[in-house]
Image (cartoon, rainbow, N blue to C red; front, side, top):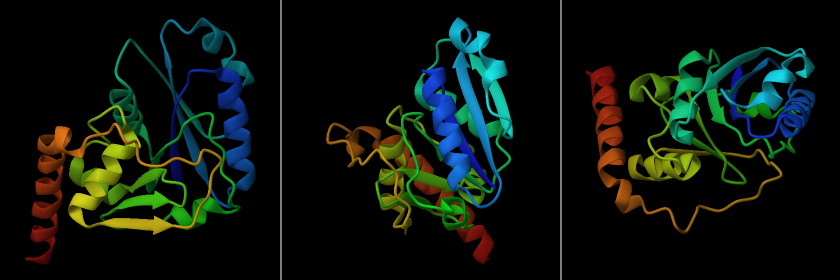
Length: 188
């Protein structure tokens, strides 16, 4: 199962995103939605959400990466994927292509990133920076563990030129060390 982690900023976009994602999926997906405690529009329209597997969470004023980490903690999928509500999958059966296990950072054809449950279990978090996708891609490159998957989506992006891998060197270095230690233990 794929867990799509969606921070809600626009309930109409979120509903459209969910319907689109469900229509192109072959197997089970779950949606983890997080919205702000003071988002009265979303609160008043929860009954309009499609009848898919959904976990709802609310939060105060916290950073994006903290939202994604909180959603990751309750997700039950084999694969975790931060998903922008304005984004749409273009590849039919994308969930089957993404549902691969292992210790790596996954990247789609349009530079959206995802993480298998095994990697999340080692790290204990999804990301430590608000530029979530860039953080994961940088981590994957530092580990030499980027797995590219041929799945397309509507928001074609490149790595953010303002994201400075060196500025997050300590955070990424700690994550790299965690993963390497875990891999060494499994080979002993």
